[in-house]
Image 1 (cartoon, rainbow, N blue to C red):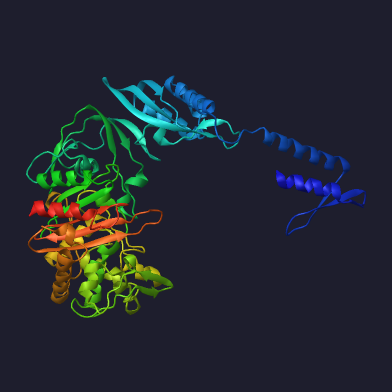
Image 2 (image 1 turned 180 degrees about the vertical axis):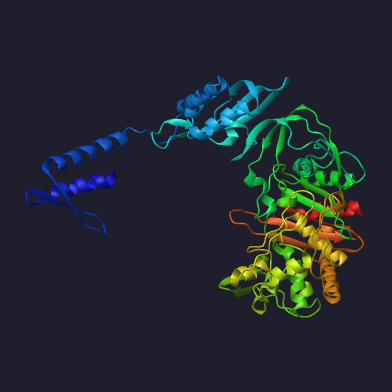
Length: 565
């Protein structure tokens, strides 16, 4: 509106020229000139309309919402919803069309009736509320209770307080495109069991909620069970069938069982003893995740996450930091650019692709060996070799030797198989130390240690491939005996004398380890990583925003290796 006002002011200051009985006024503006021809009355009308529009704009409420506005808008919406007045409830939101669809489906598809909504204490623009209702389907009824919340915002056109509509208002488990449905479950229930035949439940193992959902999604229809009646979240097809990455796939979720179906049995490779230990360990450290597997077979023995809302251990996509140096070392040794006991540069700084790289605390190792650089996790020892490498060398090494980044793992539930994209210049150099575009999770990095321990890649799995005759991923080549021997030497030395020594203290036998810290934009502390093996066991863990891997993820991994031994 301000621009139009300035135009009007310039009109009053400019002496108009009369052209053929009409008035020609130059409308000023940066970079253009416009000639508008008006009759006297037309010009006057335009000024009147501008003033009217400005006055109307002044009447639109703006600024922060008052407590009364928030509570009133929330109560208007909740009251209309409780009374079954869909149109009125939808009109109290900023997206009436979507709200109408969801609220209609709440009754028609989810079969929820007799709803009582109770608002809680407001916090700013957010109002929590509790939901009590009854799910009724073909003569079967069961009470439903849960908590949700809504946020009040100003409408974009009139500034009036309205509910910021999103599916999670209806139920906190709903995401965009998801629906609530009551009926025969699309997938029969399963009874997942550990390697010894014991039932796996979230009561015993809190981390396994998403894993159990994934097992049901994958094997429910083939495990011999019979569907029951349930209220469930049906995920949007786009979330269930993502072609770009299996890490983004989502499973339907059961919210309430009205009648039990007959479950089919699905046997997993999990060890009850090690799974219980993994659960205990991650509970001690916020935002931690860990995976333990058997290198000789690929069997996953334990998986746990401190946070239960997302399976970071299997589906996380995080920069792995210096644990990536295990893969990079095999590349450098293969190409004759490094050798365990030969001299290798570890300067304070190394510049490549316009970036100046440095070591933690800017240390350097004078006249040191590659073994010393690996054990102390010297970044510049790896970055200094970037000029000798092709842009796709690291990508090929990760794919061909370690089976990573091909998006073809079939472990039995959704997983992310790691990513080592082809990059150039500084980003390629950063990839050598697990930064840049490299992304991994504990499952991937446990597999990396397992490949070094066993001598060849064996795809990890949670359910035996014999259950459904699925094909496991393969690596196209193995490391040479010389490279493999040196990597084992490097990892053993790091476990005994390097950055992993404190965590691995007391872990005896055939051992190897590597620590890592990954810087993340916006985080004060890096993500701490640790990957290691002991005999026929390999594990990896991450503690997000935890700091150095040897101090955070290291004790979690080491404790499982000790117990498993």
